[in-house]
Length: 174
Image (cartoon, rainbow, N blue to C red):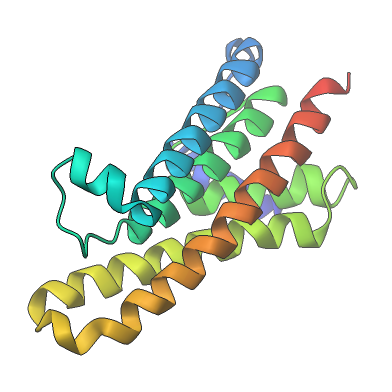
């Protein structure tokens, strides 16, 4: 695991930077703003009144963006944890590796916590692929995809809140 971290350090995608430690709280604040964005987008999808007010089509489905905002909320919280220990990361995979090495192995997070963000990253990538595919075919063919995306959005919404609450508890520890 440490060899993988060294690999990302050598590539410059992870940097040891003690000056970033005071910014951990700012990353957490950013993750909470992303949660608010996720929630707002989610509410638009559930409200014909909001869609009408925003002049969106009745069948507008923002769930892929719920997933993306949820993932980025979790990712920003992950960056808060990295900042707490003096790392700055520019790579999502490297971030997960560092979380595992410094937070799971040291029992600040458990495997379930880490799997929340891993699953969110996977789900975000899958939704983005579905979205791309959706543009290449008739919308009618994707009615099942919309339901799948909605299910993913529901799960990531819950997971994002759970993960960020856990990160906040860790950041409060000295």
